[in-house]
Image 1 (cartoon, rainbow, N blue to C red):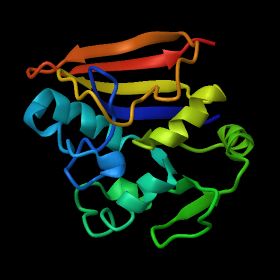
Image 2: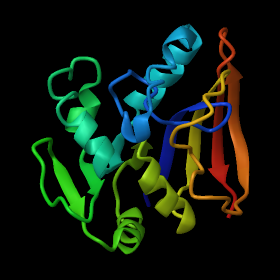
Image 3: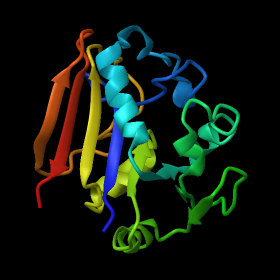
Length: 191
C-alpha cells in the first residue's frame, strides 16, 4: 500500500507558495518567492537529499506540474529521480503533458487516489500543489507531513492548510532543527 506524503517548505504562518524563486509561482500577485534561500545549511541539505532520494512517485497539482515540467527535464542532473518517477497529475482540464512518465487524473481525484494508494508501488510525494492538498486533506488521504518550517512570516500567499481547519491528529515521527533555525518535522497521520 502506498502512502501520500506532503513534503513542504513552509513559513511560520503556513505559507508554502514559491519557496524556490521569485518567478516560481506569482499567482495572486505573490512577489515574495525565493524565501528559503537564506536558510540553507548542511542539516537542511541532508534532509532534502533524503526526501529526494527515497523511492517515490510524484503527485502534483496541474499548476505545479506546469511549473516543473519545463524545468526538471533540463536540470535532471540535480534530481534525476524526478524525471524517472511517474507523475500523477490532478487536473480537470489537462489530459496529457510532455514530462513523463505521467498519468493525468480526471475529475474524480479522490476516488482515483484512494484506489491508487491500494496498489503496490512507492510512496506518492506531493510538493507544493496547494489546491490539491486542500482536496487531499478534506478527503483524509494524506498519510504524512514532511515539513521544513522556516523562521519567518510572510503574511500572504498560499498556505498549507489554506482550505480552513480540518480536524486531524498527527504523531511526531522525527524532528531536528537546522543551524539556521529551520524546524524539520515529520508527522504521521494518527488513524
